Length: 325
Image (cartoon, rainbow, N blue to C red; front, side, top):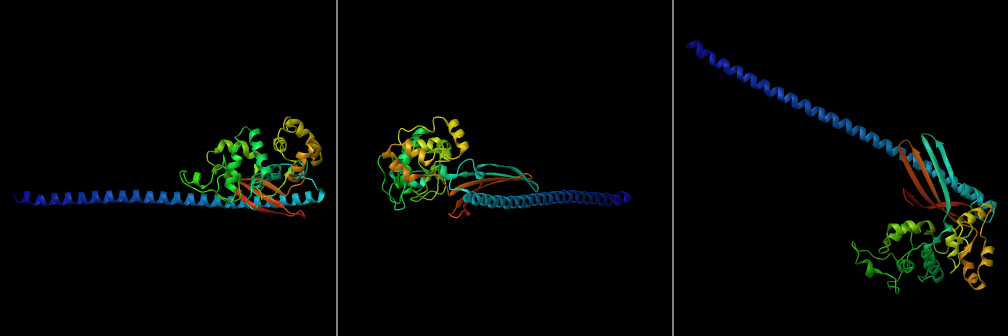
């Protein structure tokens, strides 16, 4: 009986040791699992941080290369200004820059004459009055592109400083405050043609159709007839369709230089029409847009630079945007 009594505590002691070992084993497994998760997280975060830092460095490097291309474009425009008083599509500035190798990637770009487009800011004069010639020009351009001419008057109300709604197609704060979310008319000049999307119901599809023919420059710029599309030139006057009828022939004529010239237009229009058109056209430009695309590794940066060339040929960037113009 005594031996049986003495065996009982030994069995309990063994059971207690087994439980302690089991708990210790589970604790060790949990610690190993936690350490593994922590190590994985630290390694993953480190890799992500390293990749982010590398991407930021490549982006900054690409931006500096794009600025270098911008300075190069400025030099091209300066040299062009010294060669002549016309800006045509056969000059050096109009030739696209093919992809050139740089350390770790490529850079390419092209310059476009923005004075070859209709300037939307010409719709309203600096004193806030509607410019009837510009309004008529835009209405005819919209019709030629199969868009509703009403957008010209809507844009006038968007630009002018007053809050009086033009009849019948205008819109002021009363219309915009009913939108969701509500907003007000800008009552100032545009900085980007994408602001057309603020007009009620204008939409992306209309912008895609109109965008290649319009721009947002300081008020008062003239249309460069040497670089403008045929439809923009033809819509200077009602019922005039000489240069948009055959775009291929227009491109061939421009291979020799400026076409049509201001003199060509003066003979093409009636004296009455020309008296109105004359002050809105020229053969020289001061505003250009540079599109630069830099590719470094897996990073691609597109920089759009609005360049203004002054009277002595020097140029400066007045606006820069990334990814979209």
